[in-house]
Image 1: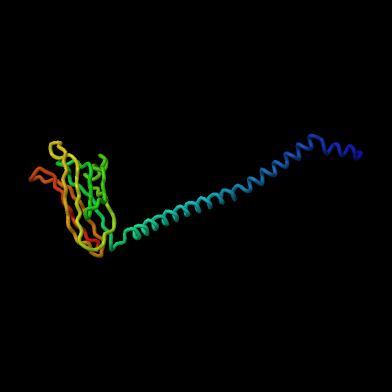
Image 2: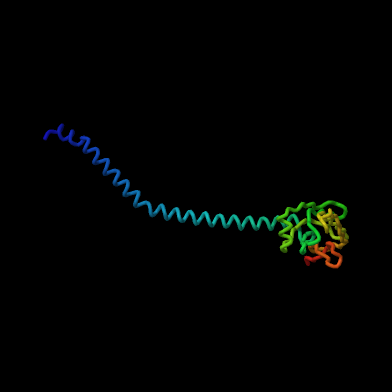
Length: 191
């Protein structure tokens, strides 16, 4: 066979197809061989992402606590909470809190929030800082009273703020003896 004939048989279309097929088969075999490694790397990466997310959540929680400590140090902290008893004689609409003649909180309640309060929930109305000494808090409650009439009542408390945190709870309860709602303030020491 002449060299020209040999050359033409090597470059024939059938020979090119065979070599292309062989190259594709070898690439496919390499890809299949690499798949378990890729899957293992993907699983490792997923685990790393989960670990990073958990670390970020932990860091966020720690930052929140640090921020609370910086903004509201325990020695000057005052918090006011609101709780409700059965509420047969009063439907709460809003509350306004003033401390030392300065408005510190106003809150308008939704039906769902009032329902949560009836079921034992407690709402933090205010959290802030007060220097040590004598203070006066006034809370004004607005809503519907007995017989569906508009109702606006207030309760006041004079208290001494010491070095520790001070917690005040606004309590709305029913007075069965008077058939009226009762508004009072409970003091909790953070010492």
